[in-house]
Image (cartoon, rainbow, N blue to C red; front, side, top):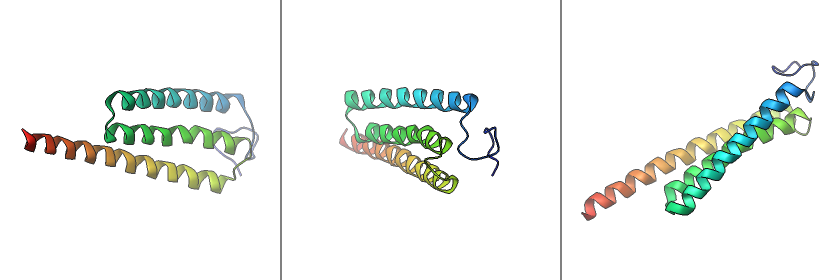
Length: 111
């Protein structure tokens, strides 16, 4: 099975270009996740926690890609888990938006 971004024509092929992309992606998403955790610690609100968890789901994607690249995950498992991470991320962001709007409304009523 040919996979875009993989040279060698088989799943599990390890190549510098794709490895570099995954490494940069993992590093940058991990830093973004760390910044969101620090923001949550500072603010302490549920919305910030949900955003931090959503970004943690984003960190999972390059990890899953790396596991698939070295053959630890089958293409079908990789595909399913990445879509699951996408769904979790979307639900957490929607929850954060809903929570932030609810808190805003409660504060307006209290004024």
